[in-house]
Length: 231
Image (cartoon, rainbow, N blue to C red; front, side):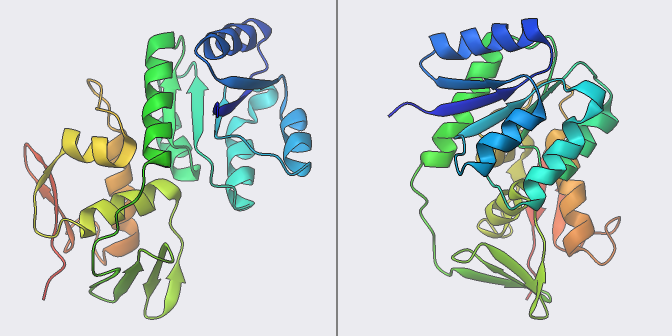
């Protein structure tokens, strides 16, 4: 069965270009020139395997992304933007984007990232025992996909959950940045790509009492990160 991709893009040329590239690569593509059409399709009870959000009129991309995540929709969402400002990348990842690409997007790179994301999404998950990880006041339940602190739920985005799951599954094992990126995002980091470090910083704000002096998620200088659950 072919994967279904939805594409939202207010620029007609960009919409047609990316839709053609994706269709020729074997995907079923549904295009929307505005977020209203996307909302209508979702209201009809349908959903894509992956959503790509390009330029939207009136700068509605982030607000639309936030709205989708607040509705509990968990399908992967890629954002494409002409801005290379790191703040835009950080905001997109914080709101719930799974990936962020800077325009003009190389078609081969776009396809490679989509394929990696879908492979990871459909790959059978092998849960190792225990299914509940305890560290400090936290409990991560892999079966329920939840994090609790003192029996109170803690909200995690999809990317934050994936990152924490990988880390707690490899306690006291230093993971290099590229290795960790492949396990969490399904792709290597490009030069000067700080998206993984942004996610680590976000996760530290959630699980660390003092994010600038991390107890659990520590930096291995010049290499990557290591999770130390304590006794």
